[in-house]
Image (cartoon, rainbow, N blue to C red; front, side, top):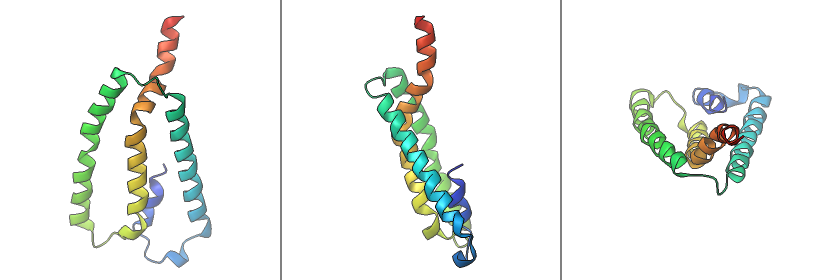
Length: 118
C-alpha cells in the first residue's frame, strides 16, 4: 500500500494541483512502515536462523528480477514517467524490504515454533 504513493506520483505532471494532504499521508505511512520494519528487525535480533536466511536468499533471487522489470518500464514508458517524483520512494522501500526480509521470515514463523514447543 505504501508503494501506491510513488506509483501515483510518477504520473502527476502538475504537483501544485495535487491535494496538500497527499504528501502528509505518504510521509506518515512511510514512517509507520519504516518503524514497523525496524521493530521486527529488533524483535528478531539473534533469532534469524539458517531456514530464514535460505528463504531470504530464494526470495532475493526472485526479487532481483524487479531490477530488470524496472529497466523494461524505463525503456518502454520512461518518457511518460516523472522519475524525480517516484524513484526515491521506490528505492528506499525496496531497500527496506530486502534489508528486513530475514527478520520478517523469522517473525512470521515464530508463532508456529512457539506452538510446536507447547
